[in-house]
Length: 225
Image 1: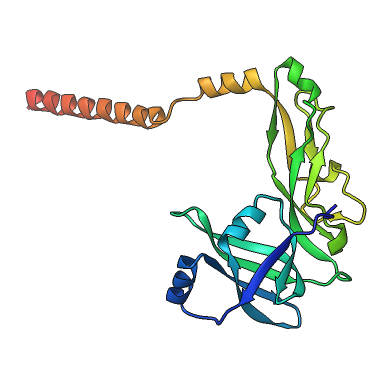
Image 2 (image 1 turned 135 degrees about the vertical axis):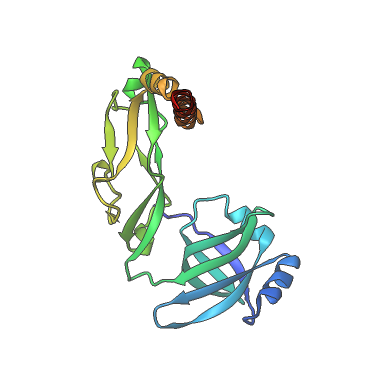
């Protein structure tokens, strides 16, 4: 359960232009916004170093602190600068403890290997987050799934996962989360598959052959004439 309290210090800012946001980032701050039902959106800024340290955790619910006043929020979006590889903007949704929320929660396999591993099995994870609904105090930071009983060919769907108390899965129950595949069979299929470019090469060979055939046909017609 989300029993760890993540606190983030913030300060109010005035909404500005893209250039204003760029200048703000140069001072070591990240522009952010807080919005929610029944409240006016509020522009804030976050210390980039503090955010970097905090973001090493699985984050869903945070407490934003401004001048000693706390606001409970759900982390909705983190925009990244692909060149600098760091957060460039944060979106937070203000929430209430007595109202259910929807959030994406990380899903991970347990530490024990699947039973099929001894037979050459390989665990594949097809889905890394599950959308759930719960009250804020019941929202888990992550969901750990016991995969130890999986044999070759077994699958675990969203509907097979026991949700924590007070939590309901929103993601469709039929979506596959984990699969135990035969590693040797998968490797054989990969080797049998044509390498990139081979499929494209075949039509070129056929086209070249047809060109030669047409040229030969023209020569035959000239000889006949």
